[in-house]
Length: 226
Image (tube, rainbow, N blue to C red; front, side, top):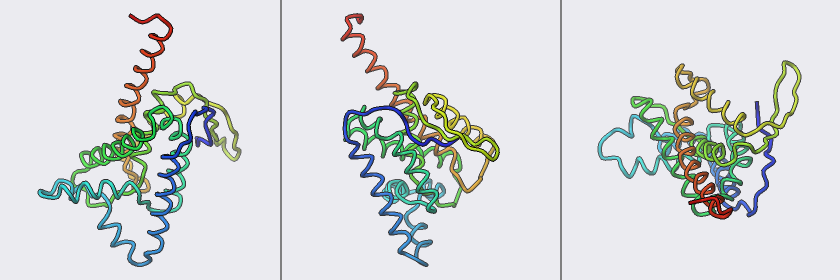
């Protein structure tokens, strides 16, 4: 299944989500401009679990965690990530507010990198991509808007059909796939599945806090609270 758009109205302009998309695209164009120097740039800038556990690299580790969130391994990697960020990021930004949402996005990316590091502490493979941070956005969306309708493309053999499905199904199945792939040790396409899992769980934790706060506010407004 591939989500195409959600049917969840927002109240504010998603300035941060659009800004993040623009920055990711510009960073990718810069990567493409490096030509033969791209490999060296990725090696210097990407997050490498084995280097994370080396002593005395705190500043370098923080830099690599941040930089790796805005680098991508190819055009399809970029487009897939930006599609998910565009579909689900605007409503999370709307609920959190612009500044908190940006801090949350960066924190989710950091949590994803840490999850990847602890799942593969001896890996020398550079990890890049916004997937971990966006996974945090997906986890928050799931808790904040579980019943929001998502227009989804569903492959049926040689045919494709679209269907409106609740976010809890679309994102829940996505998460189950990440967990199964991580547990089975799948390395298809070099995907860091535990980074996705870590980012998603972090996003769910923050989304739960916002959901509970919203419920308390609603109860207080309706006069049914303590």
